[in-house]
Image (spheres, rainbow, N blue to C red):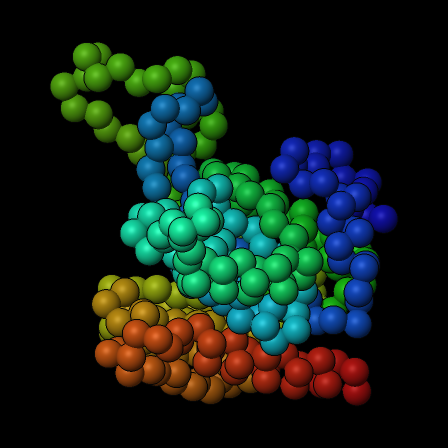
Length: 297
């Protein structure tokens, strides 16, 4: 296989295990989901870094709803970020909500339900972890190429928060930067490699590619989303504003030949029991089914 001939497989990627997962039930749809934020190290022996912060909530919930819709999920996540199903609680909540019964057994209905939910889907997910921007980009390419080499139909759902700037290896200090050596510390970052377009052009051309665009300025949202379509050839862009991203997104669709359409998805921001990811994944699933039908013609 093309991927197996690659000389520099990332140490976090076990191709044999990934292949076994991908081939165990090819009749089920496959979603390759990325999640969490990337880290930009400032030293080769890293103590300090610049973080593109993300809890991974959107990626984790989206992966969960993909699995509920019957998909198998390859989940590329930032180490320590949120996981599907498990993201619905935290350690503090577990301690606060759990009691000891008269027989000494733990009692927590919420936890038991989450464990049942996780048991139902755990065989549908294959998890890989990254930390740095370099880790993320290498794994994104290698996993995409491997899915393509196995000729498995898929969608690629890029929910990770990727750093726009980084410090090249040759510009990093070897060891921890010493604060006593500087009155001010000036660091010159370079733009991150623009590799999004390679997913459709080289790595996995047959995938339905969904990217994300988060802005704080509402006036920039549509402009940046359409730029991703025109510049990188992605099929869909999920665009949102930081201030409203929990309850409102706009999905821009590449209609080819310079044409596009958009669909707004919104929930009542006061309704805490509803995840916007549920409606988003329902819409993405519809688009994927249309995409597959079109490519089978």
